[in-house]
Length: 319
Image 1 (cartoon, rainbow, N blue to C red):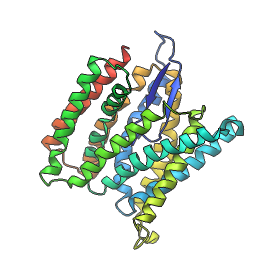
Image 2: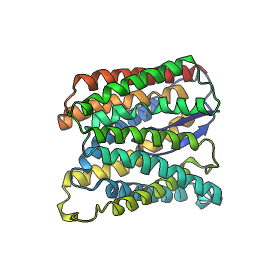
Image 3: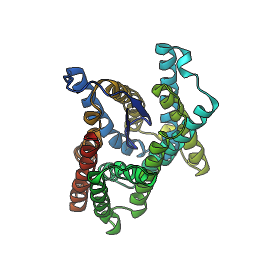
Image 4: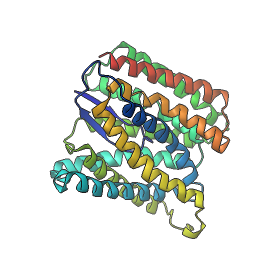
């Protein structure tokens, strides 16, 4: 059995346990297409968030996104698999709600907040360190990930230190950088916890419940922060609406469906490569669309983080 999880802005918060495809299986064109969707769409969600928060409050927009996406996914599951696929025990529902709050409120919600002051490419590179935190959590609970994974953690943390330099130098607000780092820890705890508590057996149903719970959490935090005061719906720009719709449809539904299908149809080691491809896509899109500057701390720190994630993934695929 193998387990995989998405990173904070990888669209949807699901950790699925699946049987790996038979070794030596030929990689089909459909697999490469699905992988391309995950690479590009999930890599572009950081850019989408940055555009959304130009004229929308962070937590209220995140809450609306996840509640809408969760309700749509619930309807799709009931339509394609029957309402029985949505049946869960109270313990499973509580677990899904907890994981949803950790991943979407603590993880994605904080990323959305941070992107009001942090460039989308930098946020993506900071988030790429999530696999390193997961390795730390696994070791804390008695697992032995392997020497390569430990070296990957050290590289990831070294890259993380370099990536904080823009905040320390005043080029980027330090609170935004630290907020993303906290988000990565929250996401890692949520991802790790989901493999230890009784989750719904259907991964699509689990993700739907997580999105609704996390979305409600984001709305409540947004209201608690007073984001509704001074917010005029008519002042939201057309590009922010377009970006929000893109995040709901493509980031939270299309890419997730491709990801869930890949878990059943492709080698896990191949699927896991999104962890170090998404940040590169995000940096390129941020530079091309929003003219985000690629300073030397971001370039060097990002390269070190991606190298660390590559080492962790490479070590895990050999285990």
